[in-house]
Image (tube, rainbow, N blue to C red; front, side, top):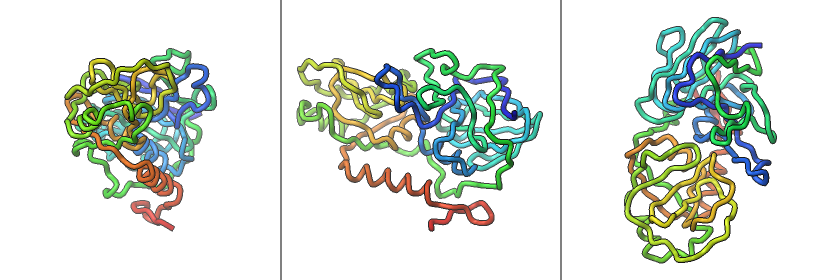
Length: 316
């Protein structure tokens, strides 16, 4: 079986698919790829099924050796990808043979890279998902370890594919997140809502796959006692200090802080590629508009096909 023998995991490397959708009643986090855009592109380049498992690498430092033939694609944070010590481009396919080595250096922008293989990576499955959730410490589902062999589902060599530059994300561009009013929105004062959408916030050092703590103008917190309730991806919790927390893929399943709204899922993907000291702004959005953006996103990856040179996409 071909695969990658991991030499270095860097700060953190996990195996991620679309997440664990059937375990929240057991207290299991959903998990899944934090940046859906880069994750889907990694699989699109290899013509994989949309939810095929990828390696998610945080802040580079990853290196591995191929144990057999395979095709990979690397997307996400802008950094140096080396194959056998020679620099190669991201957002395209690469053929590997047994003994080839790959490495990712610390990115110049963005935080997360995704390494896909033709057919997807194999791994332990729980509740119909390979997603690793480090904070839960589940055996075999915590994080990739040095020396571990990550097996590939296929040894097929994929055709050459390269993402058109027009779709290349800019992880340094100003970031404004769309927020869907919800949960306890009506309990927050007009002043609190105005603060959220007019004041800039800064990403703090307290960030991980569970959530992002932000720093900025205090938001008035409603005086109310809440029972713990289910937590959605992108929920904006406002604890007693008035500093918002955006909850992400490895969030807790239940929580009792007031929630002024929910960041759109595609905007959560944009957020997770930004590091500490980045400025973030919020704006309230209509649910229908957010849903339309997601429909277009899903249709693009489901319906577009590659042209003969593998460098452009065709919408049928």
